[in-house]
Image 1 (cartoon, rainbow, N blue to C red):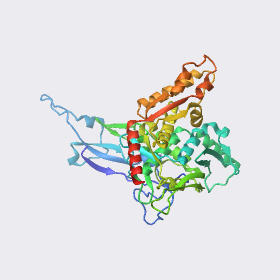
Image 2 (tube, helix red, strand yellow; image 1 turned 180 degrees about the vertical axis):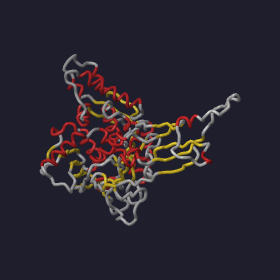
Image 3 (cartoon, rainbow, N blue to C red; image 1 turned 60 degrees about the vertical axis):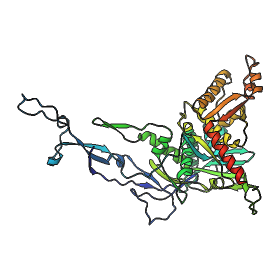
Length: 457
């Protein structure tokens, strides 16, 4: 591959879409941000089939002639000439090159560097993020867990001692709230899956890692797919294989997740926060926060990149003394959202709760029943041994993959396990407790943070 000879420059159309959970910001007109537009307004970069297929890159590749025989009156034709003939006469200086058409992006996409270092990335670990993930976990339960608000909107309420998080789904502001529109929102809730949680964690990790001075971040569908370990497609040009980007269907799934996340509103009710004391030497004071979010949603398309900013619901938890972040293992995003649902949800739970107990040297102890209920993992009451086996196998996989350091039944639980009856023991098993420990890398990171916090207090 020696020289780029020609390129078809395409212009990517843009579709304006505001959002409350993730605010898309700024315009991307074919590769450059327009300075004439307002500094903050919602938008997204997307492309369609025509934009992707009409853009190509012509590359000149060195041609190698076949070996000639001295007895032959005429030289053998070059192999590439036998396979490909140009429509018009090429310049003489191109006689030793073969032209190859390669796909190329219509416009340079914004960079989205990976936030993962040594397989770990920081994500917000506040109660609000846990509440949103809990709503996504329970979306398949539908109306049995998600309730209809006074305005008829799907709403999920996550109540804990530290406050209440309400997640609701809203239609686009430019669309009337009719019975048909509300029914469409409930259909959208049914489409929510664990992939939505992966996308949410990925965009939050990118926002914490490389947000711009204005608080906004560019992310692409390909960057999210790379975070999840999805292999891109490759194509061949002669003997050379090159990366040709991710498959359109994979990008479409990410775009659908972003569209659903953009329609979520997050409200905080009576959430516990720490308030800095006017006296620099005094400890922060405890306070309660109630915050009602505002936002809009938009129209469907197939975006490939977004510039976004986390909604105002997250602001109180990104500034000291209330900054709350946890280390997310890349493997958590790479578990299959359908075949490895147990591993994925247990890994998310461990990510947040091991951070909450980071100041303690003791392991994290949790009761099995409430743990499974919060993660909306199924119970097989007819064959309880299947549930127990699936639970233990998932925790063993987390240990093997380094997501957690170790897990065991507590000593009291082990004594009860030894005397379980042959039947009707599922409720007894649900009442047992397990102990989790973080991986060595995560434990060392949290220990260092605790040391710095003690030194500054």
